[in-house]
Length: 161
Image: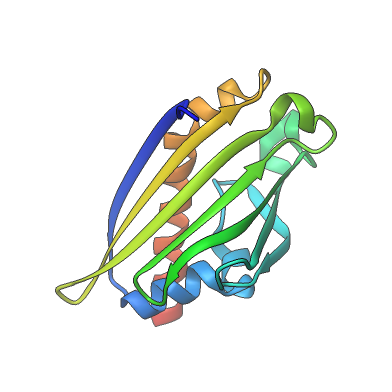
């Protein structure tokens, strides 16, 4: 299958690869920082092993106006893993209530590298298919993930205080 698009991100964090690993694999930590601004995570499961399930539901908060209460589930499976350095998962995400038209099929590869007193995080997202009503969501991924990574920075900083 030819990918529809690929998006890559890179960030430096003032945290060890082990701290970042836990933030990406522990459901209680994921709930605290996952997603763009103004969403909550009412449901989260992560079984970080090859073949294990990842399931995260984002829900629009009050500040998202007419989208308030809209839910965006993501369900997938971990396909590759090297503890504290690499994980990959295949997943599908959609808008609850209109999965057929809003589904995004994606593969995500996360790499963690020690860097001075912190870590470098690289994330590559390959969009395999995008539903006809999900094109705007797919195009907004760069913006949404910038917020996502900013929230991770704040989460990690708060844990160190």
